[in-house]
Length: 550
Image 1 (tube, rainbow, N blue to C red):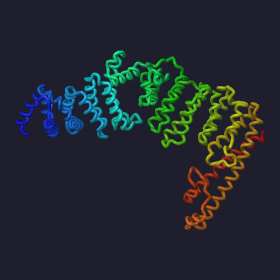
Image 2 (image 1 turned 180 degrees about the vertical axis):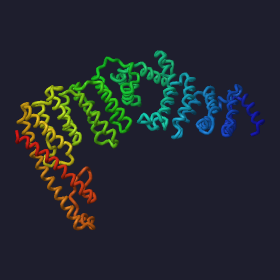
Image 3 (image 1 turned 30 degrees about the vertical axis):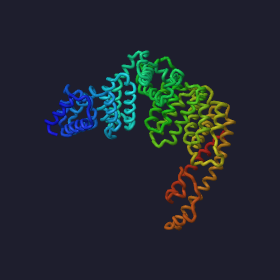
Image 4 (image 1 turned 90 degrees about the vertical axis):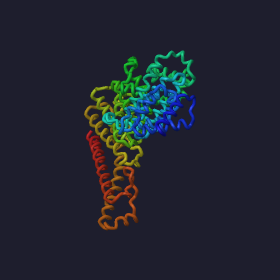
């Protein structure tokens, strides 16, 4: 269309009360042409002309997709397009503008989510601040769109990743905080009684915000009043309030955000007790970032305690049973190595915070329920450490001496499946048990505490059964190794066919069947097994010598 013809159309638009579909199409074509040809200055002048205000207010939101796309380009200056967007946010219909902007957020390119949020959030904020009764629902829509997009961004796990912020999560969160500030301040200044002046939806949004801001942190985290009768609406809110509180607990106790507002009256034991639910919730998630937050929160709560402080009564609480079990599952099953290692460290820290009676009960529980030799070996090693401390008159409370110690040993120094115990799978537990027995016998012979007779009986029963298992296992593995080597010498070239006709007996070693291994791998496994049995036997012999010498 020629310039003079366009000027005539604009003059007609300025006096028109309503616009047709053809008018909208013509307006958008002219605007898109200006943007595509880099003539955004001309479009900005048209938008800012007060004589065109009615035209822009009625049809301006149609330019949003192209303006946003142009603002995100790296090869052109976005200043004019951004100025146009800010002007549209001030004069166009609030509802139309909000819907248009949120549509651009929802449709953001996955690689440009952070840039889109950074550009559009100030505009959404400006539009919402112009609203009155529909501000609450509009804010809810905006936050929902933001949450959906930000949740798609990868989480940085290290300080270096946070500084580089390749995917823009940190920038997006900063933009989000800036976006909500005026609304938080408005809610703080709002008289609760005036909520009746808003629509139902807006009032609920404001009441929810008022509750979160004005409620004390202990009440939010510890007293769970959100689930009581005064907060029926919140109980039905699909926002996973427990997960929200868990995140608040992490921010408060780990990141120390708003820690100055948290009362100092609560004891470290009470803080730990209340946070255990949140720790378990975080640890139970499969995401690495959630597990790390759970571990960090647990550590911060434990570090507030002095050693040997937690009483045995806490172990009867559901969360104090669940959290150690969840830690053990991470230690055993988690595919991420550093999480397994970190969980073991935190597990040990928890043990150190238990008092003597609680340690005694906890050790017995874990040995009987973990069904994992590595975990059981950790517990047996801790029993030895507690006995050492007791004998050095450090933290001596009697729970790792005399009859209390003997009762624990009877549940601990055993072969779980008797003569059918898989010695290789149970190697960690068996070696720690033998080391503990040897240590106790030597110490008891040196300084008697009156448990020698029972201790010797435990040692003799254990070593006698273990010798039977060792004899059977060594004989079997030795025979297999000898046969394997003989077959290798006789039929080296035909080994596969020979082993196919006469397969080895299936032996489970670290979840891999020997018959599925190469001959070289089988040879190494069988040799390692025999060396392990020799180590066990050497400890058995030493224990028997100590008993005889005494």
